[in-house]
Image (cartoon, rainbow, N blue to C red; front, top):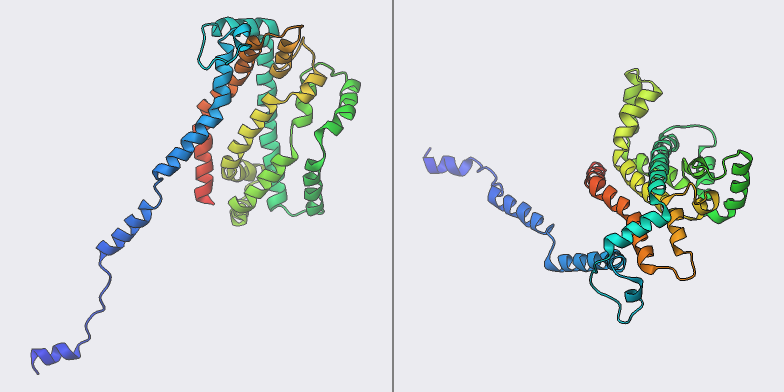
Length: 302
């Protein structure tokens, strides 16, 4: 038998696609993920529009009240910024107000994140009677306007003897229906039931399951909920203006005193608003990277 006959009888191996082509396809798919010039232009426009109110507040805070009343309004910074900031700080008593707002916002944020995570975990992974009915009742409370609860809540706090005290503002918002529903929806997908069962098989108690399994899995959502809660607690005005007075105010209550008088000084009011906004900007600059990183980590895991 000749060599040519053996070659004809033996089946040739099937050819596989060249690895270079596969590499090119992957690289081609990766190139589609890069943003184009239009994306950057749109993002720049949105960023400028979003920053415009803050920039205008800083410009108005650096001018005099007489200059702000002129037409056209100023479009660049003046030289009275620190003078107006000092006037707003002294007139509104922002030293005490800043301390109270930090205490109130941090307490509300910590309690809301912890309690909402626990409640969301119970609704998402635990089986107990009337769980669906309780969840619907919790969601239903979100449809009630908060203004309806002002009068009975004020009467209740007065009976407890907590008028004009910070616990009057802290207690009603230790946990929220939105936070509970938000954490429940996240934990349904992000926390596998098998992971909880494996921890219980290893002998972990309920407290250890929550600390070592639930909290690490819920960390990205907890970061987002914490940021939203802190911003809401810091900017809350309706209930603090009713429950507190000017002797023991939060920042928003203290800033309300700047608008009183026969002729309010608009430049000083803008300076006070700028001082009330700075802590939020500082918090975002310090923790924004961790929050965004947690969101991305949760998205990849999901």
